[in-house]
Image (tube, rainbow, N blue to C red; front, side, top):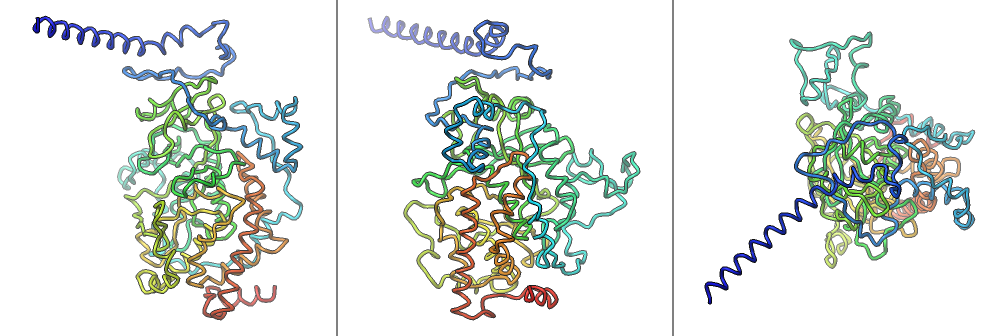
Amino acid sequence: MKMLLVRKFRVLILMVFLVACTMHIMIDLLPRLERRGTEGRPGCSCPPPAAAPPRAAPRWPSKHTLRILQDFSAEPGSNLSSQSREAAERAAGGGGGGAGADGGGAEGARTRRLIPPGAPRPPPPAAAAAAPLAALFEHPLYRVALPPLADGDLLFNVNSDIRFNPRAAEQTEWQNEDNEEFLPTGETSIDSYPNWLKFHIGINRYELYSRHNPAIEALLQDLVSQKITSVAMKSGGTQLKLIMTFQNYGQALFKPMKQTREQETPPDFFYFSDYERHNAEIAAFHLDRILDFRRVPPVAGRLVNMTREIRDVTRDKKLWRTFFISPANNICFYGECSYYCSTEHALCGKPDQIEGSLAAFLPDLSLAKRKTWRNPWRRSYHKRKKAEWEVDPDYCEEVKQTPPYDSGTRILDIMDMTVFDFLMGNMDRHHYETFEKFGNETFIIHLDNGRGFGKYSHDELSILVPLNQCCRIRKSTYLRLQLLAKEEYKLSLLMKESLLKDKIAPILYQPHLEAMDRRLRIVLKAVSDCIEKDGYDNVVENDLNADVNTVTTER
């Protein structure tokens, strides 16, 4: 009797195994049958094949097929993509209530319509006749010359006789003169370089790029127009980021849109679990340039086709497997990361287009090593614990006795970064980087600004603690902040004008622009309090030459 029960149990296990294998095979074949069956079906909501633009057939891996999953997201806004930009346009147009009331009419329906791929975009609003941004860059404070550059002050010492060879770029190394291939053009060698390479060779001890470097504007255009040839997930980090490679062998970091322009960070969110916003990366680049720091790599917004420009060109199987079609027939994916990488937080297009920011890569670490430093005013990244600087008012005195903050300009660089982060509301500055070649006498690279511009209704004063504790600031920074507080050079107006150049403008919701003006006044008040307490000469470090000091004093 006992042996009979054992045999029955074994037969039952075998049957369950066979049923499971059969179901697995059926599920694996389902997408292929679905694609064949929906073609020409009367009830299908997909556009007919004749109306679709000609494109190459998608390359489906042999052992893996795209499975139709459901998006269980309870957040209606998680399915939004480009329409958030139009919502921001209505809000910025001056009619919060009126625009919303009209949104249900025919005009509202037209504004929510997706711009077809390749269609020309409407031109941005005409700039003001005064062109305050151009006037700002002509101000003496924005024409201060750098010290003469020696060979040791350049990140790369380039042989101007060597032309750029795409095959060498593909192998991430330079070809030597013996097997060098010359491009069949009449340009000089430097002119033959792609814009991303011109950006790289322009980096020096004092700046990532010069004020009037034409390669930067050209690089911003490349970021939104170059053909994407491959996509892979970036390892590390808490949220999904993609590495995109272009046809000219340049690379950029893509951060997809997760929130609409008008959404604020929920008040119950900790700073370390906040969303990373694509528009914050774009706005940070423009703010950094207006402050004349030039320490943020070029960033531009782009509308990406998730099917042609991500799914069909990626070789990352882990990324490819996360694509699915939502109940609204939109293409979605979620990738792999620590936070917000699941069907509940999927990134969905309309139907397959999604906004994102593209930040130009810095030179490869094998060519230009960077050193990572722990920010002295790093937060605890804990729900209950506080960092030392939050409980010790004399914390800065300890920092100033510790290398590299005990000499040179590093403590002043930290103050610049503090002002930059406070204007954005960015609490997530745990580390920073510098180029190893330049030692301690160089600038801080302002990387990873995606957690800025999360709250326009709240000013996080704890970000200003380094400035309040150390009471030090560069004179050039202080004078530029005073200039940006004037009505003719108002920071919010300059940012609005600068951001209109981006392809997915408007970038910031109007209350965020107004919040920057408010925070600028708070920074100036903090410096004024320091000067009243310690004296001007002990607070403001003169980094300007005599001629500039004379001109700015007269103005």
